[in-house]
Length: 324
Length: 169
Image (cartoon, rainbow over all chains, first blue to last red; front, side, top):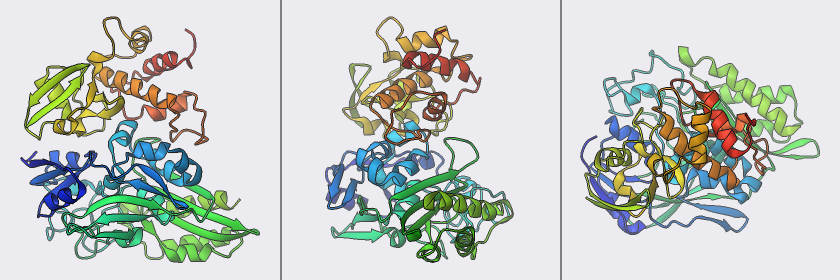
């Protein structure tokens, strides 16, 4: 691990100021960042510890819920209100990582977890995300945990997480304190950036911008499902995951918000997929049409072709359950 | 950098480089070598310790982030006589080489507290519980601890007996 200056932040404003420089990073739980620092995939010169800052815990906010940035994944998953009203979020969190990691990982940090593309991790290989302009060794290489949606000719790295997939289906928003002090709220859609020509830039955050909270609005659907398919039964990243928030009225789908993991370069949601479903009576034909829409722009590599039929099957199974 | 914390109920002070992981601080600076370095990347669980009562991977944490924290390692799980969990590991032969055992013991200790607090798991049919420590629940909740000797039958029997959900053998 490269040497760095360690700064224990006293408050969010001084934390932002300390991190508003090139090659400074916040550290919360550190479960992803320290792993990458040991491998020197990331080598920040300054670490600003925000783990002790008080961003508030989990608090009711009108009909919704506000989750402070440093609340751990375990505490969110076990919260009685989340379990009762936003169960898809509990389920997504519980399907990720291990008990030890969930006890350490924070809500803000989880949003910023980085890809597990093995070429991103291997500093001897080309990677446009790790070293812009160096190329992409994943294309034409060994692929399995890679994206098939939202890719570019520069990068096919997968967004690996579960929590953010549920947050997309729940229309959650992210509160950010900009380094100059202004507060700003982002939708999940606006927060993440597709790789395009700059796969090293993953979110809207600039140096010093600090995530302070995640907001869950009142759920628009009472039928919530998170289904995750992976290579082993526990403690593995998703090959495909689907987060569904659905409401039925009079035998028709009145609301459908479907998030996808294991497929996209960012936590994925396609409004056209939701639109195919809303107003329809549940049927195999409707579910297939939703899958057709989801996968119309898929660009699989040789090792990720299996995701196309797998995504179709998982989506169909989740929709059957959610609309039954 | 100065660090003051409590390890196994004893106040300790260190002057260490910020790069030192909690695991290395325990092993190399405090000479508590019970916690093991298996993968050093949060994948095997051999380094599991309790921080303020909760289990974490000590390899994926900086020591300097634990100012004021209460750490318990395998050396601190009991005072003198083995804890019921430790005794059950001996009784059920819950190890072969023993390298993963300190992490298994700390993890299981934290996991049993999580169940007592009513935390659900991925294996729970109902998010509202109740959570009985079935084999499916146990496998899921302990998935962060690997045993390369694959002594899982003994580990599982020891934990379930301690939890009161195992066979009375």
